[in-house]
Length: 125
Image 1 (cartoon, rainbow, N blue to C red):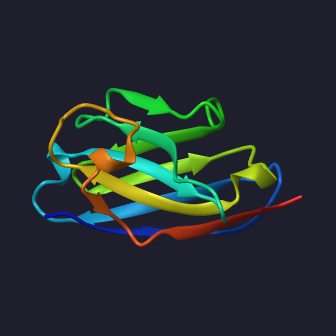
Image 2 (image 1 turned 120 degrees about the horizontal axis):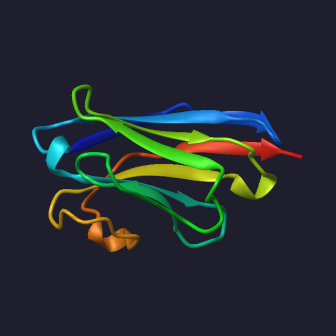
């Protein structure tokens, strides 16, 4: 079991930065691929970023490449998402997710068995 709690969302102007953090509890964090997804109002859930077990490999959605950075600290059971150069189209609820089964990075939401409650990010123009 993995319990996930996101924090760090809020309102920011376009061009600004935010850091989201996800705190995980449970014994399987270090053996879980971790991901961030987002869902804007009226839209489908979208893959944002994922990181492998050791943190040595990452993957990003096309719309955030070069602007967002995912990282993890297995000693602290946390995974962060640093978001730079934010755009109004980044406005969404951001979710932290854990895949404790496959061991490989996946962009498919249904492969992640554990989800946080989400944190709102709003980017004003």
